[in-house]
Amino acid sequence: MSSNQPKLDTAIKFGAGRVRAEQGLLPQLGEEIARFGKKVLIVAGPRSWDAVKDQLEPALKEAGVDYQLEIWTGWCSNEAADELTEKAHAFGAEEIVGVGGGKIMDLAKATGETAGLGTVNIPTSASTCAPFTCMSVMYTPEGGKKTSWRFDHEIDAVYMDLDVIAACPIRYNAAGIMDAMAKKIEMLNGRPEMHIDENPIDVYTAFNMAAYVYDVLHTYGRQAIADNREGKCTKTLGDVAFLNVITTGVIANTTKSFRQSELAHVIYDGVRTHFTHEAADAIHGEIVAIGLFCQLYFNGLQEKEAELREFMRKMDLPLTLGEIGIEPTEENLNTIEEYIVNSRHYNSTDPADRQRLHEAVREMV
Image (cartoon, rainbow, N blue to C red):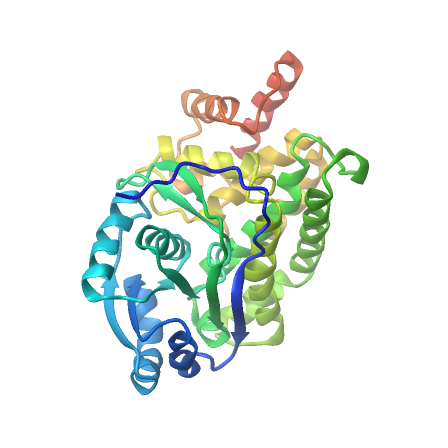
């Protein structure tokens, strides 16, 4: 059985040993994957597999790569990783290949870790940095947040075909923009600014990378989504996809996945845990984006909320808890507030901080 108890590892793992983000990449992936094994277990989402199979299957065949396909529609859980590990071993797989969105990317990594194999990830959207991070977010089989499983090594490769990203529904790429922009806001966590003399150099470095990503996405993100609406693989869309997945993944890995995710991601975890069914149709970046209104207020930057709302509105993203299926009752808001207070991200005993958090949670209504 798999084990995913968090480990405090002081080593920084920046991401993946081999990374390519290009147009027309799928036909080359047979040779790329063959670098790591000639028998692979592919874990894919159903729509994601449909998006790549016509080009990926011939490429694998030409490179002499034998594969077993497992279409997965559930969550990234220990039970799923165990089940897929058994299939990988029975097949004699030498590598795990993930094809899909964030949950599939995390599941491929978790399966590789459980099976003692390497992982290659092929994201089909730019919705999250999960393809690149050295960790997997683990859930219960029903979809409740369980834990974050941090690995002591990088994954083998990430291959992102930008033609696939351009054909992806805009909802996913827009959510990825918000998940990437969240890093700057979350790393402040209770402060309006960050200073080098108050932080470890790795955290301060990651913050400045996050600020750069925020600025570029704020400037070019809406144009990228406009290009995405038309299915155009432009430089702008490719740049945004690179920042969403790869650069943001480096930021997360530089902080060892501890300081780049604060209140907005805690809210995501709380939603998955306590409102699993109500928000089942909401995707990661959509929930995180709504949580940013809470995070901005908590940081003392509430004057930035209106600008962020307008930015999100132009990409057709939800703006409130109610829009993702959670009734904004006092009971539900208190549930989210208590989840934050009991997390590692909130450690204040000051009543004024608690009042500020109470008010911040109401910014998501």
